[in-house]
Image (cartoon, rainbow, N blue to C red; front, side, top):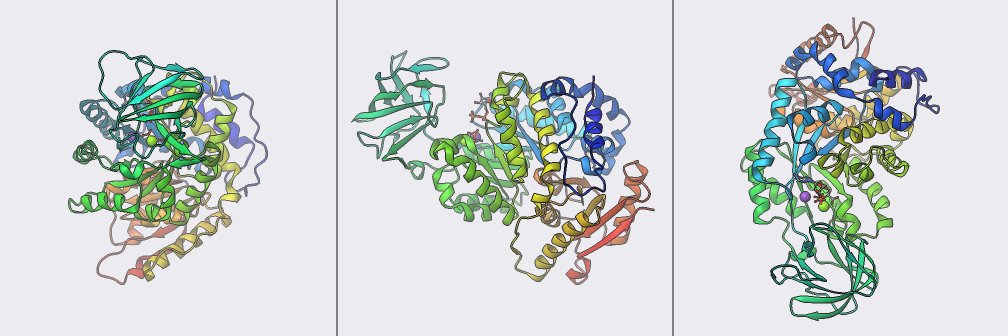
Length: 560
Ligand SMILES: Nc1ncnc2c1ncn2[C@@H]1O[C@H](COP(=O)(O)OP(=O)(O)O)[C@@H](O)[C@H]1O
Ligand SMILES: C=C(OP(=O)(O)O)C(=O)O
Ligand SMILES: [K+]
Ligand SMILES: [Mg+2]
């Protein structure tokens, strides 16, 4: 039985990862995808190695990353971050630990589902695992938001709609089961809808023609037969264009505010805001935090047509973006979703905001232990486009193969990162900083990226309080990993989402030489670095007492 170590030994045997410049040949693989998945019984192997590593958590270093470094070397470390949705299939401490060992960087809780107590229990379990086992998994809550969907369609699971059948869509309450009747969740669901419009369910699962509008109801004829699922989403179309209804709906419901307050009180790291329409919604939430001095990060989910129209202002206002392809595919013709995804990723990189690609990455793995080849290609494409993070939804929340799914993301992204290295660095990055120190920081990070690649250094070290310098380095997508030393826990947890950054808690001092020598000594003492390793050191720690630019620096250090 092969191990992850063997898998990576296999990878690296075809490559001198450390010094080679990256015209990667087709990598030799002895075994097929399925075999590799089957052999990734990670827990026993990793648990074994964890035993000797518990002390590392004193340095605030993620134990899983430490194992990866020991096994794969600097250049073999995965850069793309992984987000897993937690649901009934993975909410025990044991299952959460397996996901953490499998590479989960962020655990996402979708507030649409389960109870407050359930969410609280999961958040506390994750924090306990971080503390006791030395993981660095941050927590994201995802608001329910408002959208028009099915509340009741007269069956516990799916219902088939046959061609030509007549259905009523209503907001009226009714008891018991009424055949061919679908109850919507929103009073004004039929406002602005006209006879002759198309009602599309879940982006194409079934299509109806609106025959008549009667008060709160719509009488419709099924024109494209299909399946209605619980909570199926509606969209209305006229002459091939979406009838926009999101502006009628609030971005924050009372439940969303209460979930947000709950998240803050539990110390979550990210809030993903559903159905953001413009920057005002993001600013509203951020203002709400600033009055409370919270450091939680706000991600805007791009999932409705209006959010696409206001994309740039939303990206600028947010701390990060989620391309929520599930709902986006209801409002945008499916064939447009891939180009929209690529545009959002490019914009986020230009504006230096982390971006998560979400929904249906490995959908078939909810049921099956292997992905389709098309799913692997989709994941690879998101990695090639340099997304910061990939997200599992139902695959981890309710599927039987969550651990295998995270293995597929891990292996596929590591492989594509090696393949795509030259391409990563060809992106044009405009200057975004306005003040002189910000512009200096940007130039230093851009030069650092180029130097790191040209000198083939082993690692980049950055000392950062708020994480800005680390994110600027990440934006350049350099080949070596970025070790970000910070004294702020909130910075450490926020950096879990950024491409190529390994956040480490460290007691920073104003004396930069002391920071460098202490961190290199610690890494060497732990056997993670050795004599002759070359590090590029970038600093952004600005003591109040000196001119800022003095402490923004770039230097090359060879470990003695
Ligand atoms: N906390 C939870 N409790 C129960 N089921 C969940 C939970 N989170 C996710 N799920 C299940 O996983 C599926 C996929 O998750 P997600 O994509 O986040 O939700 P949705 O399908 O509502 O957009 C959900 O439809 C639901 O069946
Ligand atoms: C991630 C998404 O949002 P949710 O799962 O909350 O609907 C999506 O729509 O793709
Ligand atoms: K949600
Ligand atoms: Mg959604």
